[in-house]
Image (cartoon, rainbow, N blue to C red; front, side, top):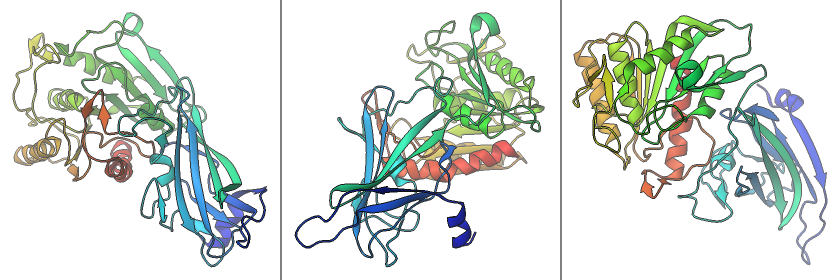
Length: 410
């Protein structure tokens, strides 16, 4: 797209104020913040550009969000305007700030809390079924004085997306299902579940996938009302029931379900692909295991099938039919997910599985290698080091998320 055409479609706001600062230095008293999408999905990058500055002028561009606990998060980056008085975040590297290098979305993922260590902090927003979006305030400051401000809206749910909470009493399952706007073509259903943290996680990811046309279920399997308290003797049939429920949803392809498990949940996902090849047509594994481990925290059996414990051994892949995508960090401090992901690929090769299978290893990322990008995240949870760095984890999510979307869309 040409520069003139882009500028014609961009929304701009002019904020004036300030004046001459200091005895001789002349700074801009206004600027224009431009971007190509005032409202966009939270996993969608936007193009931010500042114009109306003086050539070579030093300015600070900052972002700010208040989370659901009232904690303020912010990021900043200092730039030198080019010869036309422009700072383009997608083309310019900051001289200093909360991120380094050219990164058009650095002000979004590099935000830090006003108090506390960002490595320990949790960026908490309202659940997508409660708050469909959040807002980020962008500002430009020159010589310590704010000269422009604008707010962008980051959406979890696209117009027309609906949700329904599932309970064990009413549905036999615990989770939240998100359905795309009616009237579109039938698309792959996606079943998501997390790991040893329990509860009903991955809701934001589910909302984003539904916003892209996929009926998606964020499923809990222990640690939620009506479910077992611990990861202990969880029937694989429970997950199969959830997958079949997805195939019956409006807008769902009745013959196409992708399952995605994170950490301990990757065991269940790979076991489903092995035991239910006619039901599971694609598998996404984050920080995966290639082995069935003991239950948590009791150390009994984690999974059962047909009422019998699934052996605590290497997970076979001889009956897997659909594509498999494994995503891991080379600095995972929870377990050696990169090595396990590579072993899964070798097993798929040895089993002569014809469907495409791919491993993405990010050497400097940790256990928080996934999933969707552009949210700030620490590297320590509950006092446990997850590994990687905030920068490396963010880069891994930015790179891998389009491949996840592509697998779901195939």
